Length: 591
Image (cartoon, rainbow, N blue to C red; front, side, top):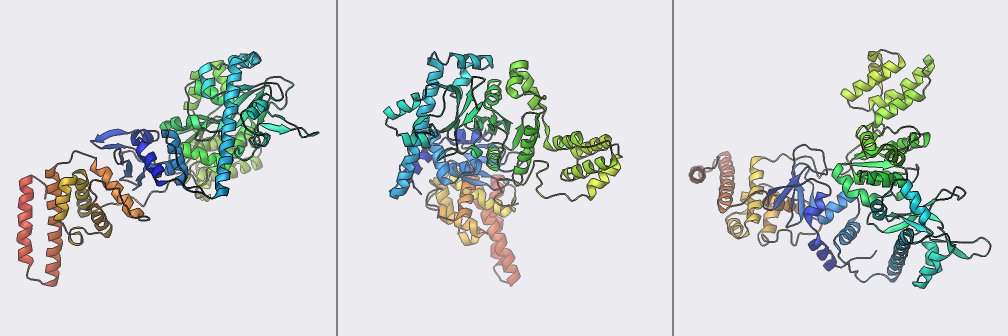
């Protein structure tokens, strides 16, 4: 696998705006001279415990203990490896990456993919230009206008038009230096059955570029304009760069909006996505059909913790919702269903009733469990005792998976009313049903990003030790002097904090430098201390007080140990402790 030079990684890190990066996921507010804070994106909380230090470009959550730098943040929030995080950040901040010497075969494969990406990008630009500039595309422009689409949203999604001639794209691409084989591999050309002659795959169609999360064009979705033009929709076939089961149309455009909103709206088609974005719902993505895959569900989970399913109210749409629930198992994903009117898709609804109508429908989404239960009640045979028993057996496991509370009680009453049973009977049957662990029936499952350990409750001494080190970072000149007055084995009670003190002694001005590879615990603690250092204005006085608190704690441990061993220095140690207490009182510190 190709490796990037260390200098490339440093340039990317230097280029990243930490506040800009994290703000796509977290509403940040300034909480100190070098600190911003907000609700942690890695665990549920109501009071902010997540902070970043924008200068050092690290983050730490004092709740779930998640820590890291710009690369770790992207790895965790985008579910990519380090290489993927590096490439995403390089693209976002305009940094050119340099490769180390690589294996010739690896280099050839990389250059091959880069050629295909370049060819697809060229095709997207050509189709877009042809839509707006050619006389032939007048019918396509009229069709898009009739569907209610304005030029801004069409430009944003780079909608285009493929000319009806057999070889216009091919001829232009060959002149630009690409080969017939590359056109075929990119899914832009296909061969005739008789003579194997290559010709343009897409002709006389409205073109929707399909991009990855980095915005690179991987393929196209194409809609026919004529009634006799089959198929109505034609997609790029799976190949070297495009894989339909992995893609969500518009995910590159919706990603930041979904992160801000905490929700992503899922629709079926390209025009549905455009209509919702034009209506102000910029967190919408499309499935390009109803064949929802596990990979698409995983991508939805990376976009936002809540998924609003605004699919057609037909059997195919309902099946897609059930597949979404099944794919949600094992992920922190809340599924909700937008009640779409029968026979109407989002694009038609926006055109007919306006943006406010679809916005209201999305706001009125219901939990997936309600949809699932109402579907069972609507499709079951409620006219016979046997039919009601079958429906009851189906819904009781769904109800059992819902935590006890208002929603479960409300849905239990709904089932009882529709089945003409007593609510107590339904509740007792639900209580007897096994509640499945991490069930997909409610669309909510285990946490996607595991906390870095349970919320640790630090005792007062350890809080003092960490606060002291954080102040040393905040005031490196005074911190160096303060650290000279402490002895790691005596003043710090835990080995991890001792390692942190040893690491920091020569590096207070650059605390994140030279961290030992593989020591994740130390890296996390140093990140925590750096974030804490930016929390509030640090003064030499507060540093001196924390140093006295450290010394007091050391003397108290020494006194307890001396008493236990019957040593005679208890009196001397007690005198020293009284002197420390006196100095703390002079500073007005609680002791």
